[in-house]
Image (cartoon, helix red, strand yellow):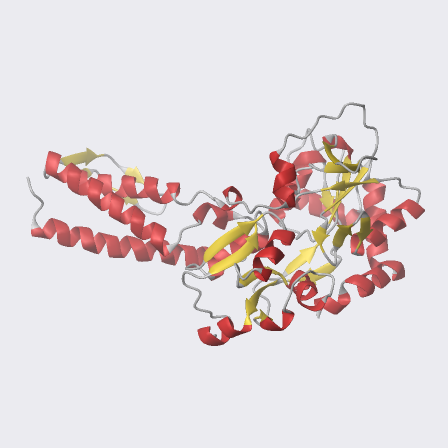
Length: 416
């Protein structure tokens, strides 16, 4: 039975209603302050094009079902939706097919794919080759850092620098002995790091370190409730007191910004590619604020700078501190800095950086994470794990005169 005119009118109206319901739902989600606590919007990486594509596929399947089964109705029982109860009755089969098929397809388009995109570079060449296993027992304790997060942490030609390097020096003065371990952006908060060894013959070996030996993660790590829970479950971990405050902004070419004629935080970025680092709070933020843009994930900041220098990327979003370093420091590697501007004047988000310390709670394997209980322990400094005193030492240093000197030396000029 060929669908009637009313069937097609109803299908079109359903398309319009569903499209705007999905978009409004995402706006409502992003309006709550959940971006810094739960990375929920990664579950809804839905662009307008994806919604339209899901609707078109759903329409086609619905029409086929209607051609085969006609106006068949399906009996349903009571449906309790907590707020309201739908009484029993009959629902057209085509309506049920439309609803269920659309949900399936929109979810299939919503699976985060940022990490699937890769840019060729040194980091990928190292990760593509299998890393040799640790041959000898490794009893060393490790201070983890990200090598390209200046001015917070960086390493070039085996020279470790930045705010985190000052913290490591301080801990060594306090008789804590740590070796350095490199952490990839995608491995943060998973207690996963690797040791880079330069051999006498000029070659580089990459060795994973034992999971329990990574005690500290120090870099541009934003504190969120979701991450608090993750590091607790990975090894009784806890964030230090915040040592810096920042927020997301855009690094954008001046001529492009002028052509877009922005107003306040509004910027028409439809089909504009925005570079981001995968698995960061910024990636979720950009997808919620600029829903029609095209996020493009990079594995590390070095590849971002290469793309900017080759004009393959015109917009990059990250924390303001890191963007200012890229734009103002001669060591950042960004060429033709006068072509770029950091926008907008106000932050798109508000974030605190903290140092991760594992082994702060000894009962993490037996007791599930409880945010209220942990907050109570914070107020009493009740850190009963092996490295509870280490966390206290780090908190004392952050607020001490020496810690403030490190902040002023590395961070303050880029935090304004």
